[in-house]
Amino acid sequence: MTRIAVFGAGAVGGYFGGRLAQAGEDVTFIARGQHLQAIRQQGLRVESVAGDFALEPAQATDDPVEVGAVDVVLVGVKAWQVPAAAEAMVPLVGEETLVVPLQNGVEAPAQLGTVLGREHVAGGLCRIIGRIAAPGVIEHLGAAPYVAFGRLDGAPDERLQRLRTAFSVAPGVTAEIPEDIEAAMWRKFLLIATFSGVGAVTRAPIGIVRSRPETRELLEQSVQEIYELAHARGIALAPEAKTAAMDFMDGLPPEATASMQRDILEGRPSELESQNGAVVRLAAEAGIDMPLHRFIYYSLLPQELQARDEQ
Image (tube, rainbow, N blue to C red; front, side):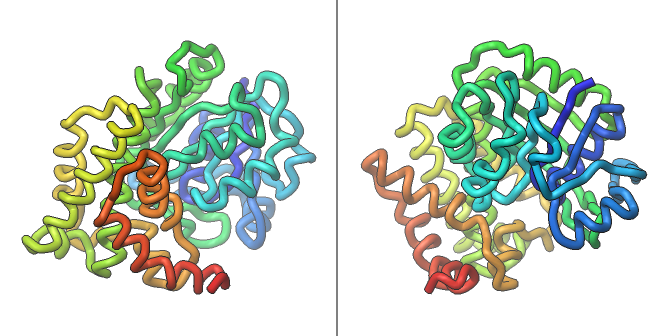
């Protein structure tokens, strides 16, 4: 049995951690507020298009010290919360602990490694559409749940193999160890930063954005810019990633919106800094310009700062 701490029990952590617990792994959720209280009192319930289930009881706390060192930490917080989360999860990390970030974006491994030690941190990503429907309740709305993780240097690691084995018996999840996890993360980054950024700046669902020639051109330009940035940073991203991103957005329900887009439209702090902001920062480091992403980032930044009380 693998001891697993899930830091952040929202849609990502709640679903994937819940499936691992359902499969018999020793899972503790690090949560807070009413969500934590509900999990402690009633367990964790997941309503899923892949089949509902409940953990009654579920192990949950807001204090990592109570949990101590574990085998694996799955990081399920929003990308902008990772630096603070890294500091808070120090008590969970022992000599052999593996930390797997599942955020959107490509900066989480470096942020976690700075605090916890690079030897403890893998690259990782996930695919799922979900939300906290109510305290203690996760709703899986769509997308076949998928996780991928791997060492950034591509070397084999028994800890990764054990985690994949644990996921292999968890229902409703596909797990892989890609040959190049960094390229896999950038493949997702290319998609999500485009979907989020163009959706947020146009304030329109994907059905409208992809069907109008003017806004479809924005999608294509965004994809191209991130593809060029990846190659400028030495990431082996195949040209097919561009086609795959457009195909994915073309296959979404017309009313679909990205979580960053919804956060911005509702005035909440969002992953702007970790998505379009990251494109701008990483491009500056590489000495290249990303004009569309610079426009998206600068256009959305005033509202983002207001949402964070940082005007």
